[in-house]
Structures are given as C-alpha cells and as structure tokens.
Length: 129
Image 1: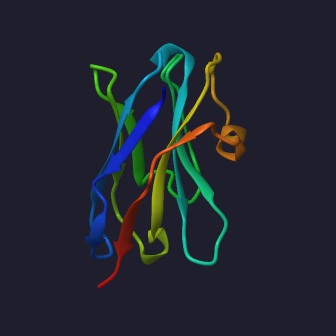
Image 2: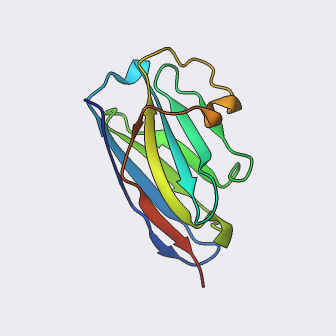
C-alpha cells in the first residue's frame, strides 16, 4: 500500500527558504512518479514539480522554475522539495502525490496535469513578513 507523509512546512519571510520532505513507502520506485502539488485558498490545485522514479527526470511549473528543486535521497525513501526565494504567492497547502505503477521516462510538463493516484495529507507553507 502506497503511503506518503509530508513534513517541513511552516512560516517563512519573503526571500527565505524551506525544504519539504515526503516519506514514501509501499511501492517500487522504478515504476512510479512522485510529485508535489499545491493549493491556495480559493484556487485550483496546481502541479509544482514531479520526479520520475523510472529515469530521474524532473519537471517544474513555470512559476517555480529556477527557485524550487525536487530530489530523492539515495536510499529511495524520501522525495524533497527545496524551495528558495519564496514569494507570498507560494503560500499554499503542499501535497506529495504518487502515480503508478507504470513507466515514466522522459517526463514532459504535461505530467503536472495528471491526476495522481495516491496523496499525502498536506503541509502548510506560508510566506509572509
């Protein structure tokens, strides 16, 4: 059974940094894609970034490109989202999600629109002075 637990959210000032973690278990990494999504009050859920367990490719939303970095630990247990140069508009509940099983080679930005199969409970990120 796929199990996802997010951590690392909090309050940060504009221009600051946070690192979110997603502890993931219950599946074979090679056949899953793991993504970060966010939802701000009154807005639709938005795909932020996705990591392919099949070949390590990554995709980013234009709004976070160059500021956020997705990665996975070498033990294949956790996916991270390093968020730098945070802006007030990054304020949202951030969710970790998993899609699979399948083959996820050469991910394209359209993957940010996929309906992922498994979801964590979310963690709040607030960017405010």
